[in-house]
Image (cartoon, rainbow, N blue to C red):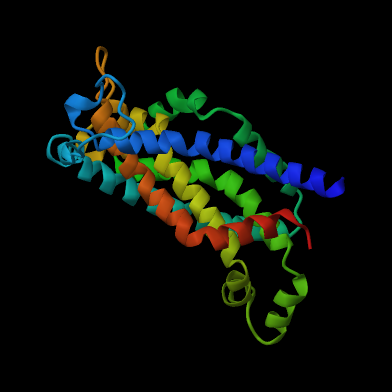
Length: 278
């Protein structure tokens, strides 16, 4: 009886996971297939789940007509610079919160957590006025500054948890051997923290890569727009260019998929090490 129940349980789990996989993968499959259809066949009837012929016209149109290469470059630059900067600052602030005691420590942590509960679009108006006064509207540097400020609070709390899992004795031994506190941080703790830092960077990069509201608000000219803004541009008042939007979506998803594929091991190690207190 036990064997039959365990077999039934395995079958149930397999069926459930298969259904979940289909539900998860099908939108990606449909976007990819739509991007490879001829523009005139996107709304063909009956619906073709596997087109008779494939076309790269939608992809070619992105770079010939929509200047998608400029948007892709802007997103890569902005997301990479903002991700690296936010991770570096959060690493130092997380280290301070994990290793030092000071009067406002609890208030700082609470402020970092409370900021994550407030929807970002609420601050769009004041933020736009501030960036206008600083003359950073329609400026990639200004967008990087905003993204860095957006990523630091949560990333700081995340990296603080990673630092707390590293024994103090490891750092103390390095300082006894003659290293300064910064030397112990960069030469001893950071190699141990590599999975956590990788997870934090990917979190920041993906957030900046996919962010729409701030990019639409602060970026006006085509030479400074990012990919989410470009995707939003395919929707007009009377029409949606599904072929071009699908092709752009595929090219938008690919960098994050490649990033997760190469760094999946570090992500799992980082998230699990940060979730368990040593």
